[in-house]
Amino acid sequence: MTTKQRFRNKYRLQLREKDHEPMHVHLVGGDVNAKFDLVTLALMAGTVPPGVLAEVAAWLQANQAALIEEWKSWQI
Image (cartoon, rainbow, N blue to C red; front, side, top):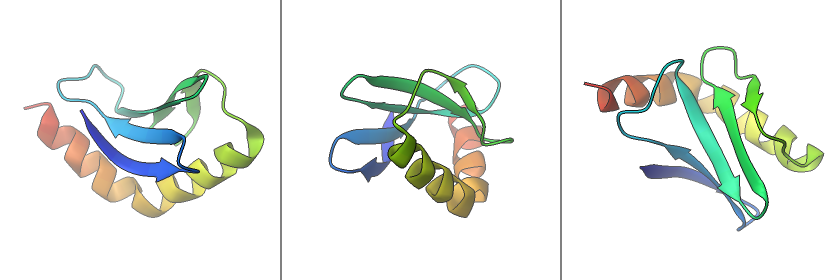
């Protein structure tokens, strides 16, 4: 597991080794335990505070290609 980004010093966006399909990342911290699809960038599971959701969505969009490549490399 690796933390790719921190938001508001409370939430961590993580990629996990040998994770299941579909390609996704986890957002954890506080009461948040959510998953985002790396292809569609949609929230797959959990809930995220609205302001944090906007920050995470923008960061995911800007870093989508690199995250997908890293996710694939961890699954081999």
